[in-house]
Length: 427
Image (cartoon, rainbow, N blue to C red; front, top):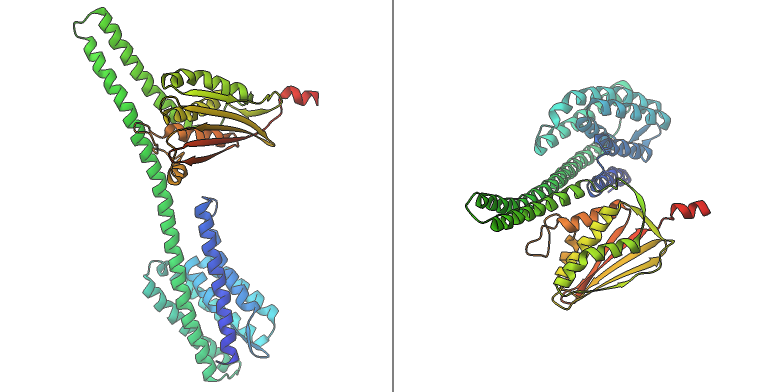
């Protein structure tokens, strides 16, 4: 392998580099859901490849320069259309002029516009072709470029270059453009698959939400309908009151499910205020205490004097978040269990640790917490934890979970500390 072939292979590696960078961009777009990235960034590949090839060329003689610029030029015009094709023509001629060599520049001024016009007409048909046909068309274009360049160089400018060099150049370009097309098609196919996966995830979440809500709402409504029908029968007044109370309780249960869904749909705090965390914890404990007593659970509190430590959020939603987590802890334990609640100042955050001695969870279950329709309870919907995660996130906080199967679970809520308005005035 002579020096020219080695240099052309290095040129080919410079073409591959932007392709892999483009693949990384696709992955970043999918992982971080960057919808702002549109089709314009597809031009990164041909433009960067073209510039790199021309900045690191293979010099054959003093006034004539060879490189693999035709590969990104052809594919950029075929995939990107006439606008990108004309932009590539301008970039090519500017760089070629600055590189020096009058004969080579004049040859470029003739060949690139001619081929550019040709591929601008082919581009709309090229995208609809199969991969095999795309390769055939690209090889034919390389052949046309080779013949046209050789004809102009020899017949117009009198530049005679050995046939062996033309053969090496042609073979490397053919092999290179075939490999690049295959890689490009694979990247496009992968990205289409990623987009379908993202849509499938969204549809799955919607279907899970719809299934859970319809299931949980249908049951109490069915019970309510049955008791209302029974009210039409000839029964005592005391029995009618009993039926009416049951129907009302079932309607309340349906309302709670709908409220959970609405809370998840709009978790951004509407009425932000400074909250004293220990007061909110105490309030949530007072609400949950009847359920704890009914299940034989003892709640133990360890709260710091946090007069100077406040968080910002909506009171009702934060209380609902605490209630959901406490309720899950109570229901995970048997009679005579203990639920520990610790409030810790760990600058610049306040940490709420809720530790139960229940059944615990596996790592897989922990990783799925907060997903709709995922729950460890037999009759749960998963909406409660999903709402809790969303509320804490809207308050710029985080929830971390540690658990050991059979020994219990610990929820750690971290929330940023804010000074109270009165403290700010004093300062």
